[in-house]
Length: 514
Ligand code: HXC
Image (cartoon, rainbow, N blue to C red; front, side, top):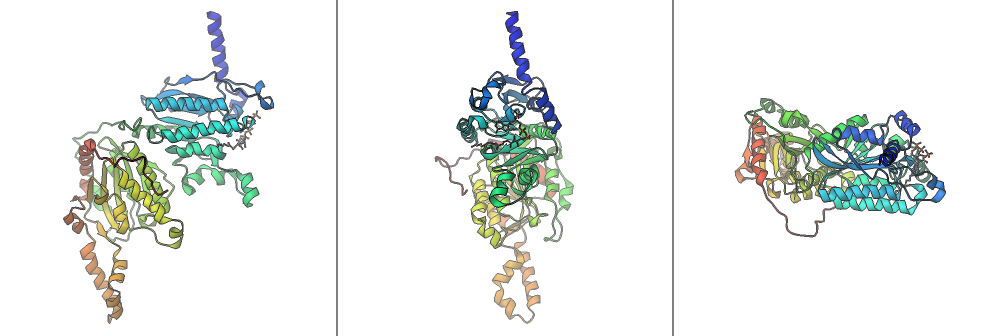
């Protein structure tokens, strides 16, 4: 027995070395951690249980059979993060550049199947040269098996991807189907075709970083939800994210302790909205004041900044925040912000995370660029996502709620559970100037002094519509609240909504305007 145990220990030792010391050193020289180091940093100490450590590839072409390394370029298993279970795979670049073989894919699929049965999140740490070239179509088949599982797991268990090295070709579609993508500045890259192919086809000269680096995907394409300077920060923030979300679609997000004896009055909120309705202010200041411990995990921070999305807690309960940002493009809704908001709402709704909407929106962005690129199609995604969501939904209108955007941003009419407004709210079909110029076109044109007439009509319009009271009279606004009372109201609202049950009609699935 002793010999057999020694033999096993030797096999394990070899497996732990992956592609060997040289390759590990090369990985470190590139400023990257190894697959195992990443797992260690991410999960609770000693909690990782590896599966399939001794799996080896079965291919024989191009002499690859002479190099069979235990684990075959991916480490898989389960562990806990803050004592909650997760399934994990971590690609090992030191073994064939982390490329995906048939067996490598089988290992990932096995852990995904297990996660789905157990109802636990799947975290994928990607660092791979893509399909194992020596295996040809077998490797492509392996990718397809993973894509299928990513898709079937969508909305059942949360799926989080970190791209910590190359991720090229069709391989990008596995992270892309998952719920959140993290990237590191400088070392992670994602693209469907790399710089060389781009040059051949379009004659564009572009670097790896400019084409598919973290900056490009966090600010231009919107592919990456989170970007950080180092892998350590990525892993720390995955932990934070996991703490806001449930294990699966039937579970609830973990609740944190909250001191309810705290009166939650925040006087500062009374002073944030400028007297001039055209002056911007920073909605993030409001969010940070409202969420517990001023802790807000912003998603897509650098993309479509006219809408803010992210996770916080209200009275200990996890909430997804969707807020217009008046300091960027006046908080207007456009294509990118609509899509950004819609996908986030659908994630929260799929995983029982209540929604908090902070609204200050002058409407949808006009212009040919928006119209021709499909603001109708994309704007409707945001509307659809809010309409469809059955989780607790609470809106606070801080200032403008104009036009279609009033309806879209979780209005009462589309099943907002509690719709509050601050006294500074302006709820109308459109902004005062545009409205007056349309409905009083003739009067203004025929007036002796058109400018004076316009001013007078504007004043009348503002008195009539630039307030929340007509909506409140009709019950479209449940309560006009003093800003400093907001947190108190929200705590109470999300507490009472804990038992909310709302169902959509039975169907195979909806047909969101994609
Ligand atoms: C087999 C691979 C590999 C691959 C890298 N390696 N990619 N082996 N299949 N796809 C091996 C290398 O031969 C090398 O082995 C080791 O991994 C490290 O690679 P290097 O090139 O030395 O590393 P680096 O300079 O850092 O460059 C990394 C890289 C580059 C940018 C990823 O290796 C690369 O361009 N690889 C090919 C990427 C690619 O085109 N993949 C196919 C994409 S299409 P040795 O033994 O020398 O150390 C695809 C389709 C998916 O994936 C379709 C899904 C539907």
